[in-house]
Length: 146
Image (cartoon, rainbow, N blue to C red; front, side, top):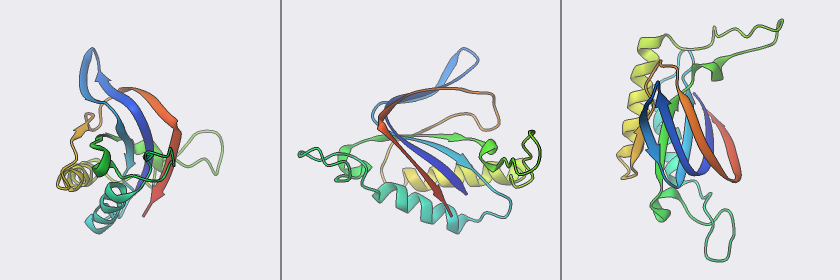
């Protein structure tokens, strides 16, 4: 699994003219499910994201508080293009991306694991063309893989 985590002041996902997911301060997560990924990887990454200290404390230190401590929200967006490779030529291949049915299953599982910790989780629409808007806070962006 590959995740691009962005700390945001706000973020939203639109499909067509409908806003399908929207959060205030928290994390925007782009999730790429790779061929062969398992629930154990989702468990590990969900636990890591819930506990990661990327929010400032009273003294302004960037790595003082977790999303639980700040009451933040999560916007989870599926992004199979995280599996893209450009080793050969100029046209990316996506052979490392998991099959859609299994990817959707792990995407939904991962979202439920995050929500089980008590953090509000909003989502995009799996497999849809989405417009994602965000205000990156910091900017603060981290890539996680497992």
